[in-house]
Image (cartoon, rainbow over all chains, first blue to last red; front, top):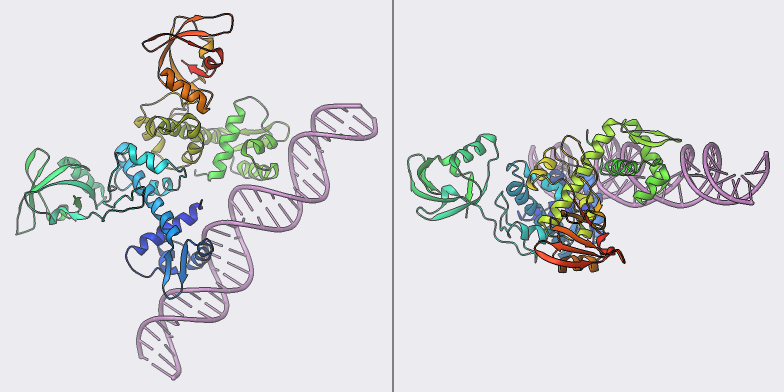
Length: 217
Length: 217
DNA sequence: AAATAAAATTAGGTGTGTCTAATATAAATT
DNA sequence: AATTTATATTAGACACACCTAATTTTATTT
């Protein structure tokens, strides 16, 4: 089954809104898609006809099995392309999302699998979101903040939350990137500062605020 | 200036048809695009309004300076993505074109340059067509058939023409891929067969037909 | 419960890019 | 040159995905 660019965006949006457990209303979708509830209703009808969703005014929109399958494929491609853009093309964290929103719609049956292999089967994208596997299985969202990990244990940086230039520059200065090995040596109770070990560099002190923006696993 | 997916396809088509030196008529474009001359006329009007082409019934369609610039950008992206798909994702020669037709429309100002750098600034795509540089400069089409080269001189395989499974399997069996070093030792006048040296393997005999489908430089 | 506010829906319309069918123009053949 | 054939063009229509404005339904206040 082939879906249009636009249909794919609706499926993805419904899927992502659904993970929050909330009711997926036309207004919620319109809000996410930055368009009009009337447009959403039109598309909900079309997706219902194609048996990709079930829509009920009370319960909102819910994906059918084939709708979930299609949505996960798109999310999978999106997150794989994000890894590619960051790791291979050197884009910054805050630039990859919008490009991946285009790339996720490229259609070829083998593309996701080949890309995944080329990237070394990454489990998480640079924002810390799990990359669905070819069979549709998805790991738990991996979102442990550096500020919350156990002292003395070795972790890998899997993603960052802030995308400001100031933050990214500071990351670079500290020599932290995705995949960097990091260990919290000591937590300072007074202000939540952390004394950490980054790779081989011993005893770097970082602020609480900084630690909240680094996701590790 | 941002152009639609469809406009980009017209610009690219006009550009590629133009390289043959022929008059670019609405029917020729419709033929290349597999659509209707009436649709083409509509689009020619739009492209004329946008000053991307000049259309004259007698002379056909011709790209303006800005039209050429836009077209070359698309061709550049197409050919870079083809290299990526072949070399990095391991697609076969005959699979990459249709995927690149989609990828060429991904819009981001830095994408072509970053991709080009990642691929090591390739000069030709896997079909032997030159990849336009960032400044729009394009090398001569590189299309010397193995059957026409000088005896005794070392060449590199830059592309292949045939895309059949039979041909590609045979290529693999002979140990020939893009970048393979090849030297013609002797040409047999009777049937045009060639005795060649592939890499370190001495004295492999290949047919005339085979040699016509291997492009070297 | 009535009034008000918010959300869902319908009706009708728009731009884009396509189409078919009809007509006009140009080219080729006799 | 007249006829036939091919090409170019116009006119009108359609699917897609969106829009605004009006209406209905549902939820929230009072």
